[in-house]
Amino acid sequence: MTTFPIDKIRADFPILSEKIRGKDLVYLDNAASCQKPEAVIECMNHVYRHDYANIHRGVHTLSVRSTDKYEAARDKVRAFINAASVKEIIFVRGTTEAINLVAQTYGKANIKAGDEIVITAMEHHSNIVPWQMLCEQTGAVLKVAPMNQQGELIYDAFETLLNNKTKLVAVVHMSNALGTINPVKKIIDAAHALNIPVLLDGAQAIPHMPVDVQELNCDFYVFSGHKLYGPSGIGVLYGKQALLEAMPPYQGGGDMIRTVTFEKSTYAGLPHKFEAGTPAIAEVIGLGAAIDYLNDIGMTNIAAYEAELLDYATEQAKQIDGLKLIGEAQEKGAILSFILNKIHPHDIGTMLDSLGIAIRGGHHCAMPVMEFYGVPATARASFAMYNTKQEIDVLMEGIKSLIKVFG
Amino acid sequence: MFEDLRDLYQEVIFDHNRNPRNFRIIENADRKVDGFNPLCGDRLTLYLKMDGDRIADASFQGSGCAISTASVSLMTEIIKDKTEAEAEALFKTFHEMTTGKSEDIQLEAVGKLAVLAGVREYPARVKCATLAWHTLDAALKNQHEAVSTE
Image 1 (cartoon, each protein chain N blue to C red):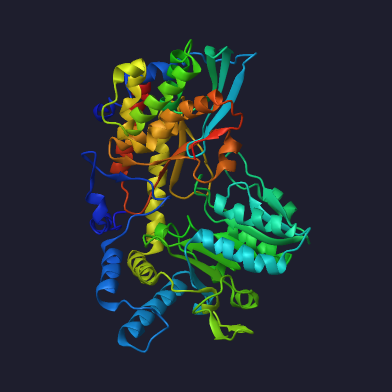
Image 2 (tube, rainbow over the protein chains, first blue to last red):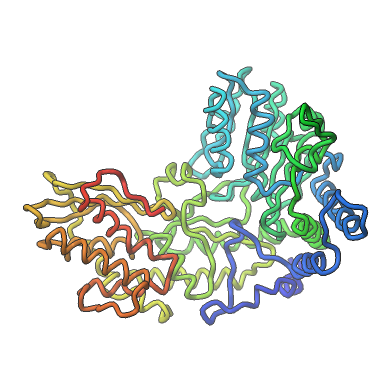
């Protein structure tokens, strides 16, 4: 803890010195989106000022420079999650698009009427709805593995859902509404024993822990750039090369073709087959800068620092009368979801905002999780590597004060 | 500590949130409409008992934030004994007051609903205050489908 360079990190994020309603900003809505370090902001600024042109198109200097930086970022992503090849790194708009891509290409090609897709009770809507749409299109059936009151997957119940009709398991690595970290290695091994491929929704997990897709042996891993201190509008689909090669393209257009005639087109190889049209060039390069920044700090160090923050916040929260934590999994990332007796999360959100504290109140795009706990919404404080114990103190004081006001 | 919020969270709002008025079911209601704010999960059911074109009784059930609870509670009080046309006019005035479309709203015209005028400074919360009224609007038009703010 003493070695974690928190002061330097905070100084690297310009927005953290903003005043909100006259107060110091305490930004605790990181599960929705993270703030950006100077390195990312400056990198994108530099791209547009000095390097920008369309990629893979021209022989001119800027196009070459832009292409080189874009492809260099792909290799940074590859190394960050330890994928075997850059061919396995597909740039998409975000986690949501990545899951829809897998559902509409891999899913449509391999999943038929009567087949089953297994998800869990704690999925984000983006890992529910694309599969429901696929099921409607194909006649496949969506199976939901249950969780317990702590917000943990009931693993045995999950395993009994796997059978020879199961064609895909799609599981959240870390829950955005509860913070639960799922036993993904165990899930993957169990699914693979029955030759079932596994997709991991890594949107929440990726900024909080080291991820090694080869060690996990997952078949697909998807995440968004904006939750990884990078730009919005960019995300990553990792897929094992053999699977991606066998999949039909997602969208047709420029950049994803080899040859086009009016009779027939042939498609480009990986990864370009899945990147039709001009991509988010500066955003990809900006994501590369975010990864460089995180590598300098070290994901293991970040995970250790955030674990201390979560322990501290949990301990403090439990001392507040009338506060109930939602999600108390043993394995948990830096998210504190809670409800207060008779105070709606939106009132909590507005009250805390007046103190400069940004939290989220709502269903967190996980309505089934809210239904499970019988609440319309929760308040959620979600932490990032730039948060501090002092900020948690400010949050807890704010909560205590608003409880008094509501009386 | 929450000085900045005094315009939004007035004592009347806390009072109606703690003790909502007309929080009950009208068994033989002539109109019954559900209102839902999918963004925050506020849900209410509005009941009206009509006497000709006059609202003889109004009540609600449901759960929501302090702003939406106070808004619907105040609304059920104020629309009682109003004609449909008067209630519609009140809806329009309330809507203008909370969305800030008109600069010179006569706060006297809305009576104690004026305590909700503060939401115009909080765009994220306007729907909390207007959900009840959109639901009433649907009830007055005799629509039965659930009202959603989205």
